[in-house]
Image (cartoon, rainbow, N blue to C red; front, side, top):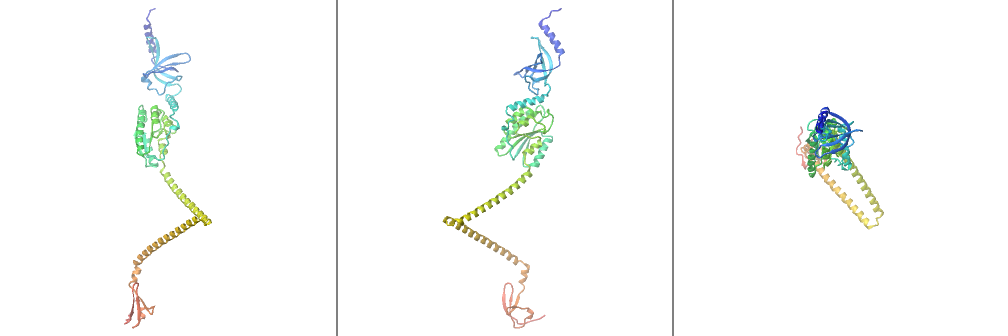
Amino acid sequence: MNTITVSELNNQIKATIESTFSSVSIVGEISNLTYASSGHIYFSIKDENSAVSCVMFRSDAIKLKFKLELGIKILIYGNITVYVPRGSYQIICKNIEPDGIGALSLAYEQLKTKLQALGYFDPIHKKPIPRYIDRLYLITSSTGAVIEDMKKVASARWPLVELHLIPTLVQGQTAKDEISKNIIYADRLAQKDKTQGIISVIVIARGGGSIEDLWSFNEEIVANSIYECKTIIVSAIGHESDFPISDMVADKRASTPSNAMEILLPNRYEISQYIDEMKTSFKNIHSNTIDKKQSTLQSLKENFALYSISSKLKLIEKNIINMQENFKFQISMIWSHKQNKLQNIFDMFAQNDPANKNLKRYVQVSKNNKTISIDKLIVDDVIELQNNKTKIKSKVLEVDKF
């Protein structure tokens, strides 16, 4: 038997183990968990009888979709390496998944629990939606059906609203950062609008997809931007069945992007109907008020009659009579003015009536104050001739018959 050193032994073990276990998949429960300031994660994975040390370096740790926690059962993928100076071995983890549940689903529940504890979902933080909105900042993709559907619904419901698109990546590795950045940008614009009396609301929107497609809206950086936003913000992500974290933090959730437009914008036809109803209501109120005042006045008159011995009431009664007389006089003056105006109109028509103009060419012949036909006149008859303006007396000197 050859004698070897400790280092030689450990090196031989290292070579054997690392070549044999170059790729392993192990299931177990997390214990002794440490997050180093360097970004590396150190922990052990154990079962009922054994444990083994593990490390996940920062380059792989940043890719994790969920947070490692003590007691979680996980499935790790990696390789075994031996640390020769101590003769110990550990697993270098390349990827980790929750055992029995998807990594994204676990990450979703973890973040949901964390934000709920911080009060991100509390109703007290929800800002009310205004009845009428001047401007909407739409944080969504500049291409695809979502933006077109939103424009179409907005135009049909309330064409007066201004739509300002902020083109944004809504899927992919960098989408979360761009969504967060654009929420902050839109908030700054909306707050400037507020100083000018413009009511603005922010809408983050995306169409339906898988949990991976929608994952950007489950990121903590996006949730923080929504929570810190001073402007009213509506989350319209996916379909009715989708509930991303952004929906829970936002001031209002919309089941779809089109539904966001329906929630935020009034129906112009309903508004028109509402105005008509208000007009009718005002007329009724006005009519009822007049009726009540008239009834009150009548009651006062009756009371005045009952207590006419009072000099004060007599004075009031006298004032009422004077007012009535003055009212009658004013009505009479108005009536007289209208009659004169109407007569002037009649006279004007009469002067321009062709029938009346023809009368100027004819005269009426009278004898002894009686109208007589001209063919019955004889010489020396004294007659009167009259038209519509002139009357003369004459004597017949000669009669010629045809």
